[in-house]
Length: 184
Image 1 (spheres, rainbow, N blue to C red):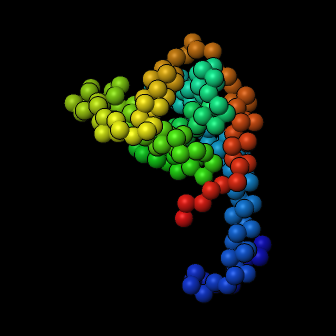
Image 2: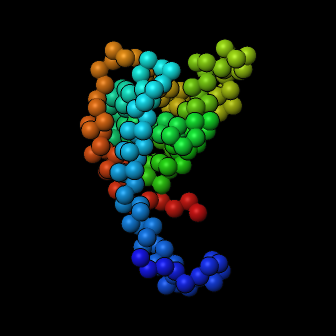
């Protein structure tokens, strides 16, 4: 593999950065495959009655059954993908992965769903379950409440008929084949 000529970025040439751009573009095209592998990593032991993968599949299945568009279904599927990398801030990790490929509304929902899910459990730890209220004037506030209430918080049921991962793979591939927006 051809390498750049520099060892310090301030010494790079346009040719060097063209080479990096080609490599990054090739890497980008393999993203959907890596995302599917990360989802598969979530199919392990869990304190829930189902695996984290089954939770994600169930959330996406509920979204699809409610008539959500493809992008929203993929966001429902990948809303917890950040657990693979960093459980303590999984919402932010999931949102960062998806952001270049999705609209602002879906990005905001994925980014904030962890805080909004706190409504269902934070009071058990003497924390304010209504922390989400700080966003009550945000245009996507109710959308995030609905995402959590209708799909996310309900999706831990081992008896719920859930679509398999292969059902969602074409949707994942479609979303990650979009031209990514840059947020540099």
